[in-house]
Length: 421
Image 1 (cartoon, rainbow, N blue to C red):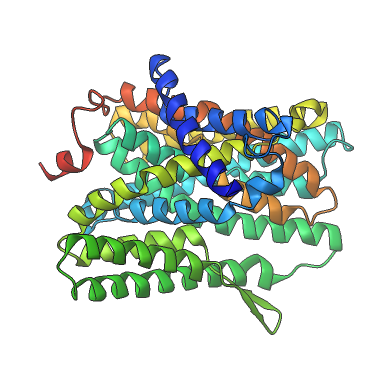
Image 2 (cartoon, rainbow, N blue to C red):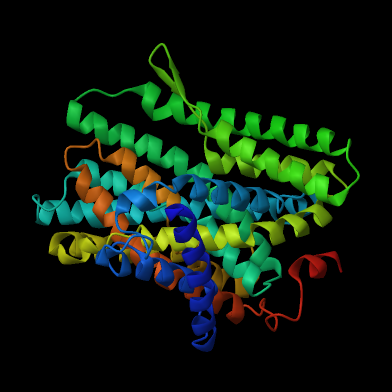
């Protein structure tokens, strides 16, 4: 009963807050996050009234399965952007921009935090600085997709952005695995090539293979049904199956085998959309079904933001340096790589800002990084940065898409139908 009340309060509260956000000309994503903060354990939840918001972080974390499912559908939707026609026209640009901006963001944060270490060694260790640099490469696909959906953004920059955000996950995984392996080696004095090189490659390959198999499975099973409602139900069931299987992990002879939820679901969507002739129609129906799920995802994300970190001066200092260095790295990395691949000047100028949002993937990396000697500083800095990025990132993404001329009048067009024209 309590969970149902909390879920209903989250959806209703998030939607009501979005009406206020609209009057302030802010994206709905920001409204959902603020609603989560209000319902969270540091505001209404702090009153201790059962059912009135979330009374503790444990209650928020107990609904983590909903967030995982939402991420799966978000990744599946982004995977549908990887159509052969788009890859032929801008695949080279997307790969180049996706890799270069992630690497430059990592280098920028590494440099800034290592300099801080030499100035104030007790503030942050070299191993934590290197790890935070790798985490800086990650970009949140959820906030970006929601802004694109809400404002029905459409155009070359929007299409490139969705491709880059998807590629960014694979690049970030490799950078984090390598950097965390180096950081662990600095603390232990031993280097593990298995951890640094082999395991991230295995995770990416396994994710792409599993996603391809499930994409084919979805296509072949869809052919047995002609009813729209049954095809929709089957698609939802397949995505949930994909999310569940992507959480499986095991170890053989000291080598860890696992999957990236985002990569698996993206690959499932990519394979399905490229071999299924009715995927566009099906995606429209899935978009409608997942709307309340995405509201829940962002409200729960807001409720899970730890406001206690704002009382820690050290975290604030390191966090501000991290945010500034990452933003510079993302912006100039995207700017330089867009110029290198001869993108339109509008894209070159505005794409970098749309890559600022950061959330779930970064938090997952930070959780792993807690194994370092001062891993708590890594987690707290990432929590602080996510708080900042999630609240201002969607608005910056909207502003950049508007400046690029890719947002039409809200509510009067449909991006998917526009893509068919």
